[in-house]
Length: 245
Image (cartoon, rainbow, N blue to C red; front, side, top):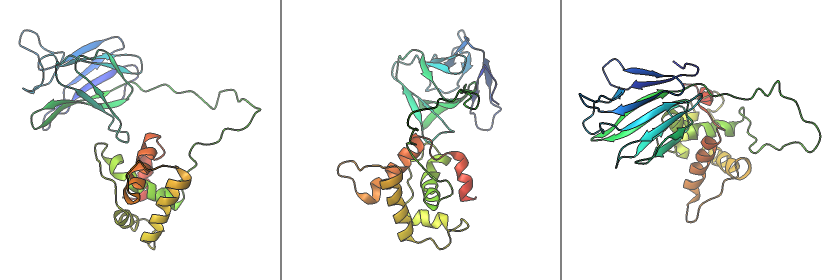
């Protein structure tokens, strides 16, 4: 559903065909409840949503979000990421949004109203064709992880809830990690002590996380590991395949 150099807005109405609006670079669209005499370009039929809630403007490989509300904050989340989101406060004009795929959430009674934004693919450097600079000391990898190692499976299991649902705040406990990995070939004999060892190894040697003041080891290590792994894309959605089903 991605289109080069275009942005698509799509409603998330359950049980109804989604409304879709296409924007080319430089074009913009208002969204909100609208009125009979002044309809919004992209209509959101919720009584709690402002008549002119905001504006989406398309650019070449990103988009801008304006919040026209006087009191409601807009939240933009990345459904494909590890919990990334940004807030656009009331009155904020032309906030740049870097996500290729995003969900815009507007506060409403009983939850929220939302719509999806499918943006242009981002441009990346072609490192294979780039000139190679020789000389000097080689760059040391910030995080050196082996995706075939057992500690990496444990890290993926810790990140799994957030990868499957970016709004989840669940961090699996050691028994839950153990139960999850017992379904993975080669991990049938994994013990609780081994899981604890690998978590401690990840924290001390691989990701080098440090506790915040007053935190307990049983809690902070797992939370910090997930935070760093997802923040720097060390564990991504494709790694869930290592856990099987």
